Image 1 (cartoon, rainbow over the protein chains, first blue to last red):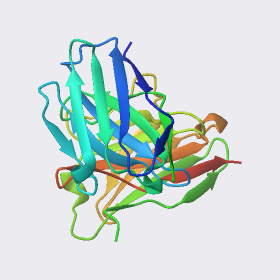
Image 2 (cartoon, rainbow over the protein chains, first blue to last red):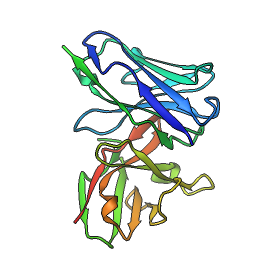
Image 3 (cartoon, chains in turn red, cyan):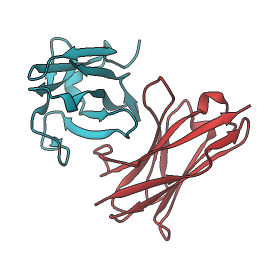
Image 4 (cartoon, rainbow over the protein chains, first blue to last red):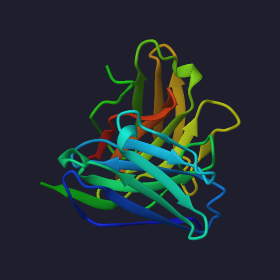
Length: 117
Length: 115
């Protein structure tokens, strides 16, 4: 059974960097593509980006200048860094995964991040 | 205009057949896309329901009841999630998603209330 667990600070100051980690269990990290998706309160879901075990990644064009995603195969972890955050980045952040080319079919529980001024 | 448009809310009675629509923006042909559907209940992460094109890649999510199915309405240029015999446990928000322009695009979501 594939399980994903997000972790990271729940509070980040404006203009600083949001850093989250997703720990993967139940599947080889090389088997899936990994995604970060967020949901601000009272809004819909927003794709942040995908990362592959090779280290290649694709990002939402609206966020690409601030996003870095990576994979640590030795720890079976996927990470997200979002720089220069503002209040608009306050959201629940989800790690998700799926077979390459077939979207995501497994999600973490999500972690809520609040950006403070 | 958004790439994918979903009605913000919908209500249904238990046992009814419910169609949730995901309308593609003019100029984007629904026939060319695989549509993914997710269900999100309050306080929980989204759950994968199904993906539909149709082609051999179509799949119903693990543990998802067979009352959930996907269709396309070419005349409306829309994807449809059909719930045959809606149950109270189906009360949730439903999102459609496609891969368009090298990016995953989400519809705004439909909140389904089962009265």
